[in-house]
Length: 88
Image (spheres, one colour):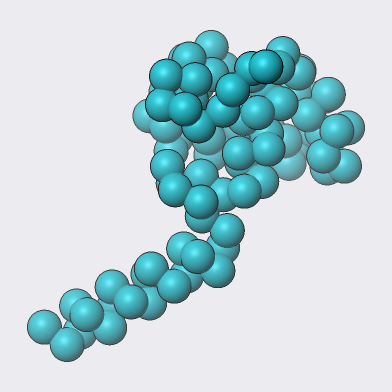
């Protein structure tokens, strides 16, 4: 039981340290998802966040995996339904 409790507290604190804000997404992934929801392309996301296009693609792939989707449209639709992002 102690091992499980130690492991659990390590996992929880490492999630907070890595910027996990719920939904399994990091703060950076939320920024990327919000940009996608406003219609930004991968290149535009990269420019807006000052990262390479490859890094933007990696963030997008992580978003798809964490949300359990396989496309940009599905990711945006699910994020909007769950209130993760908004388009105002």
